[in-house]
Length: 126
Image 1 (cartoon, rainbow, N blue to C red):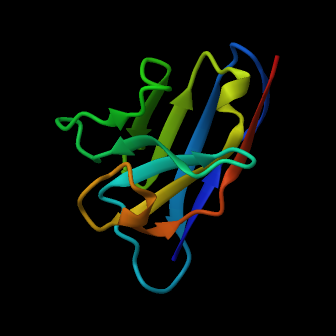
Image 2: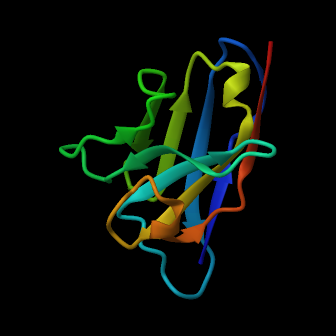
């Protein structure tokens, strides 16, 4: 089973995108109870974006840089995770990844996740 992130693309400043993350395929099941979203811009380290706890009663966590603009959610069958991104700026340009198999601990640490999607490019032009 692999994670698949999709939905990236080019967008102008102020625009919006919805990223999706779903597990598919055969093999070892991926625990998607918790989903982490990270991004990596050129020449920068991978950074935390959002953490979805998969429970409407448990609020997601967001990086300060995206708080108020980005929102996580799940499909009705909980098989797909979404990252809605609004009011995008060129500083949001990066490859976005979703991650699962959360080990516990600091959710903003990418090393706490065991499974990763291949990433989807988001490019925001001014």
